[in-house]
Image (cartoon, rainbow, N blue to C red; front, side, top):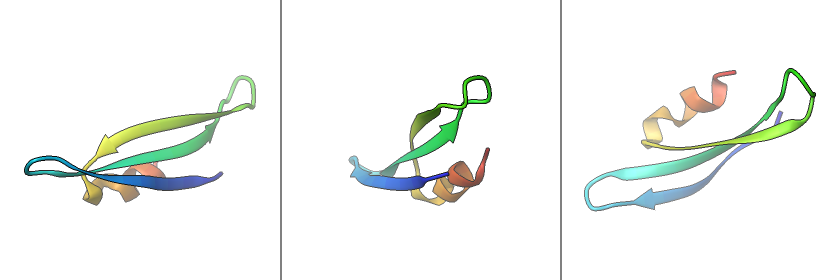
Length: 50
């Protein structure tokens, strides 16, 4: 399973990170991409969650 943080976004007062991870669909077996924008300290939790 491949996973990668691709961008760091900066708004007025908050720093945000866009994380993309590739997950396998349990029904078809095909890979899907899940994207989320969050604070940098929550990225590892997002990537480690199944």
